[in-house]
Length: 206
Ligand SMILES: Cc1cc2nc3c(=O)[nH]c(=O)nc-3n(C[C@H](O)[C@H](O)[C@H](O)COP(=O)(O)O)c2cc1C
Image 1: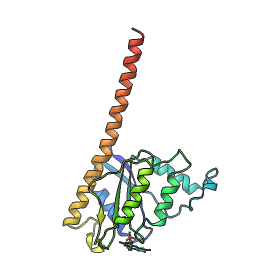
Image 2 (image 1 turned 90 degrees about the horizontal axis):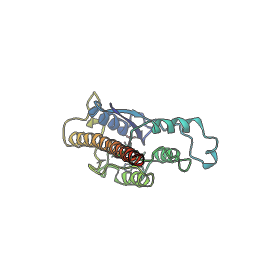
Image 3 (image 1 turned 60 degrees about the vertical axis):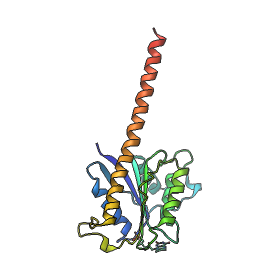
Image 4 (image 1 turned 120 degrees about the vertical axis):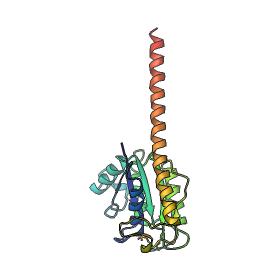
């Protein structure tokens, strides 16, 4: 059974390199990752006054993320930080208080830029929010993907052969393994707890 992955792309640009990168990553593990991009461009700005009567776009977004087994953030860096549209989506998904749809979802963060630093600043700002949101975030390989241009991709949307393609392939496999490990270990813990409860019950009635 494939894991459902919600991809959140921090660029609304039609020809976005980040969107292309997100698709290229998914293609590498489409055997076991069922990825869909959750659109964030139409989300009204988060306003706590609306928590009691939320806009339908917020509800749809929250449902889409809640249904996922993992979240992949793929984002540009704007002015050395997280793009506002992505921060808004994170805020929308995190509320109402105590009902965050991000809670416990395994995640990975990829930043893509034509520049040399590869969105390092934005990457760590997203990571900082994920820490607060209680999302186990994949540590390695770190993905500050610099020097990415249209020319990095072939006509089918895959990355051309080379060091970038190799790094992204290792990232896609690591993300799959990360999501798999977290879900399997939670299942084992749940099974253990069920066995312990059953054993306690049997002892009680002995
Ligand atoms: C408002 C704005 C701010 C930007 N700031 C940065 C930056 O801090 N670091 C960086 O590497 N690139 C920066 N860029 C360039 C983006 O990395 C580049 O436009 C990239 O292609 C955007 O991602 P996209 O192709 O997915 O839309 C900025 C672009 C815009 C529009």
